[in-house]
Image 1: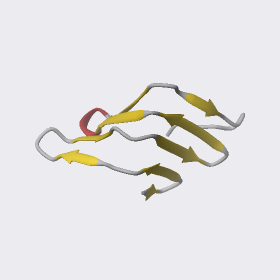
Image 2: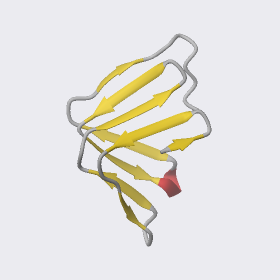
Image 3: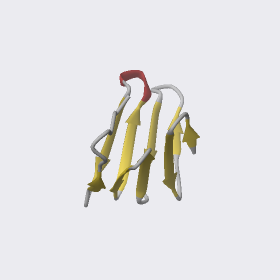
Image 4: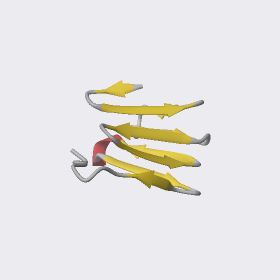
Length: 68
């Protein structure tokens, strides 16, 4: 899935429409510009603008990385 300058890759996503939460129990890769972060699973709370990665988190960030 790509949104603006960010890309999310995973095998499976689940969306809880009532609570506005996206989850994945499979490995996740998030890319933005020249930065990448990986985790074993993910929870995204859309109403809080929060992404939580779990398990074996790894990442590389460029000096110009901007989370927004």
